[in-house]
Length: 173
Image 1 (spheres, one colour):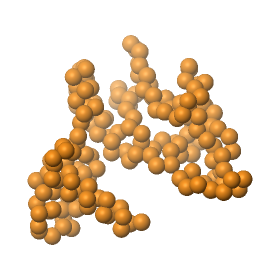
Image 2 (cartoon, helix red, strand yellow; image 1 turned 45 degrees about the vertical axis):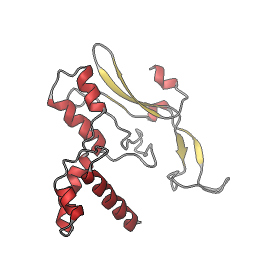
Image 3 (spheres, one colour; image 1 turned 120 degrees about the vertical axis):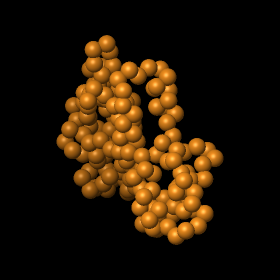
Image 4 (cartoon, rainbow, N blue to C red; image 1 turned 135 degrees about the vertical axis):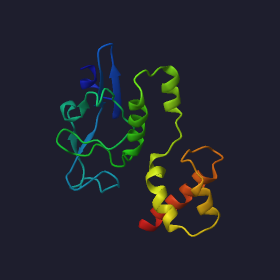
């Protein structure tokens, strides 16, 4: 309830006590006109603008899903269904956290540290089969074929995947 009155910028909170754990989105989020996402600047005083701030009752709150609460800056909507972020992260980051947490129930400092440092890419796991099927034989395909979807700094597969992903994003625009 203390976060209901938060006037800080918008943040995701996971709060716990000895009995339960909960998710809470808190902070000041602008209420925008219906035809404007906030992604790009608009002329001052025009129809596309902020029309105030969302109330704390409009911000999402939730309890555990299968005993777990996770957030990774993924897309969330207000209680009225309005998107809260203009460029939220895809759900694969949160999905990976849930996957790791659901494997066991006896997490401790060591397992939480490992999760914070986890370099596995769920995005790559989803996209790699399609990418491999579309690529001709060569060094890029070979690097991707033997890649374990881990983003180690010296990983040739991670580098090749990012180059292909960025190239694909660029061509889509």
